[in-house]
Image (cartoon, rainbow, N blue to C red; front, top):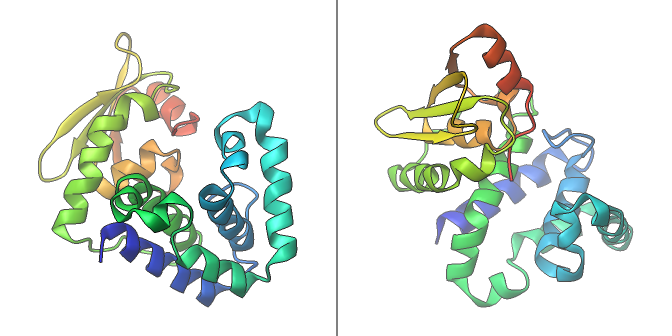
Length: 209
C-alpha cells in the first residue's frame, strides 16, 4: 500500500459513510460533487484544463454533471476508489501526483463535519507532506498579499508570498500548513503572528494551486 492508496481508501470510506449530500470545504460542493470532480480528474483528461483555467471551467462543470447523471453516488464512489487513467497503470504516478490531492480532499470532507479533530499521521506521511509544502510554498502562496513564513512544528521553515513588505508567521504541523496553503485557512489548526492587518489579509486571501 502507498500513502495515496491509503488516503483514497479512507476518503471513499468516508464518502460512503456520510452520503451524497454532505458538505465539504470546497465552496458550493457536496460530497457527490467532490466524487464527480475526482472521477473526472482521473478519467476525463479533456476536462482537466477547466479545473485550473476559469475560462474552461464551464466545460468541466458540464462533464461533472454528466458524470453524476450517469452514475448513482455509490457507484461513483466505487469508481473513485480505483485509480483511473494513467494512475491505474503506474502506481508511482498515483503516489507522486495524487497523495496531496487525496489528502486535502479527504480533509475537505472530514473538516466539514461537526467536531472534527486533526489526525495522528504516520511519520513518513508527515515528512512527505512537509516536503511538498516546502517545494510548493511559492506556488501555493503566490497570491498572498503579504509575505508568509511557514514554521513546521518539529523543525523546518519555508517562505512564500511577496519578498518585500509585512510578513506573517504561520506555525503548525505539516498537515495543517498544507491545508492553510491550499486555501483552507479558516479550517487549519495553525497559529498566526504578525501585524493584525497583515494576518487578516492572509486569512482572507485566495491561496492554493
